[in-house]
Image (cartoon, rainbow, N blue to C red):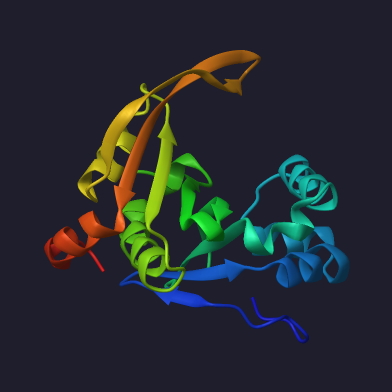
Length: 196
């Protein structure tokens, strides 16, 4: 979906996906210039509730995330449908590190390799364009698919943060994973075999 007046953004491309950056200017455009159904479609959201939550988060402070967040919609080239989101948050440019985060919008898009496909250009972008030295991932020890994904790209398990995040009114642990630029430089050639 293209709209007149929409700000330009970075676009990363894979075989099946376009990763379109969600900038502060773009988020402002979505929430201030589009009606809710168009905004929901642009962000790949199925419910008004999820859209309202995203808008509330933006209004409460995400407008200043230009140095703390760099996210991308994952869009299927074939249908132009938003299937998920991937990006960096808690980005600390002065320390050259950031946390990676990702999700698939609904179950119908899972187990199709979209996240595996999107991870490669995002990591390359992080190390080569954002000048990151360290990319971190905090993953539930029970989330086997996510652990397999990041280990596939060379992340190393570094420890466990007990009761690190809240989910469904419960405190859950996070396994800490990291990938350093020096490690990326030594393994990136092996990524050629992975889906583009």
